[in-house]
Length: 137
Length: 336
Image (cartoon, rainbow over all chains, first blue to last red; front, side):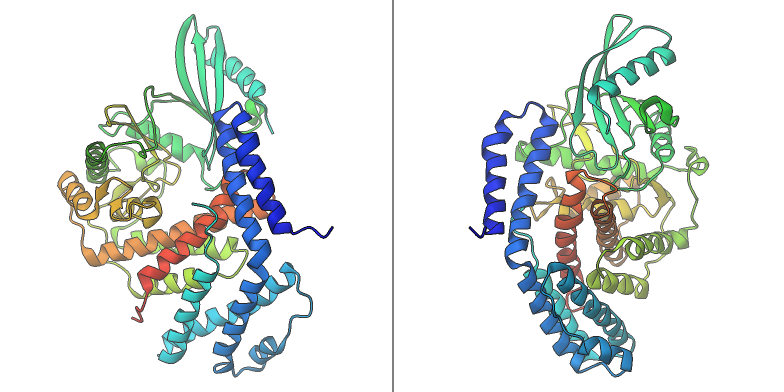
């Protein structure tokens, strides 16, 4: 069997919250376990969608930055590609481009580059919505 | 890790030495959510008389990296005033007693922190008292209370800049991933610095629903968690108390209790100060940045394994997500 890790985590979370938690004796353990269960659900969403969400961010950031970057160093960062699709590798690529976005956001404020500024704000809104954690009330 | 039994035994010995009489711990419970300190509720028998105590022990890592002396000192200076706080009893920095430093306070009986079950009238009453107390705290002279012995005394015109510099440095030092929203907010704050504080006040630093105790008559009996206490602009506490994060689904009620305009009016009347809307906007954006810094810090502790408490993971991940969206709603379309 190839397990579906996100579904497995949700099942484990349900087991913790529904079957085990009522058996816990102390108020502290109940509160801690309830938080653990909710975090496991959020992690399940992240397992299922996390890489795809980051790839969408990366594509959007590349489009914005393509119209901006001029320095050799910036171009080198832009030109790099993802070859391994682990979370760590995708996170690393996401971080590189996010640092460029921060630098250009600051530059757009200092130099009144309105189009760039607006494009980055729109991206930040979409990024926040894309990564919104809904599994924890 | 320290077991309940070890805490219990160490407390018995420590209290027996301090009070010079036999002390027996008859009940001990760990309280969930003490994000900056491990918190225990103890029932002790002192010379045959029963007494409730709260023991706060430093964990190897905490959500807020602060000095316990500062928190204990704040309790000691506020306790004699009309601001309700638990009575501070002992501060012990010797790690041989309980592996980590700890403090002990008198417990407050018949109390709760969760406002979920309150009626509309009770929430209104509690909300007014919450902002009256905050107003009274803002009106006090921190130097007369002895706070200068505990912490730096900023000039009125430096209160905002010093706080911003501190929390920006926390973000820079502790971020695991780059934070484009928080960085944009910090730049906005630097471009729009507020006027000097109207007066220097004791700023609680984490004044919100959940950080005070109230009794069954919906009266506040103790303001807790003074570990981020500092001297500064009193608008900071007002802004923190009204952050959307503390509202849950009650988006129109500051801290799930009182409408914003009523909260501000109550605070202004009790403090004798005014809440300038432009300055207040700055402080509301600032407190959201400060919150992001705290959540990022807890994330770093959790990911590096310095702290394993679930609350650190919850704060670091879920709260950062929520607070970033709050910042976006504040800064939406503001290109100034």
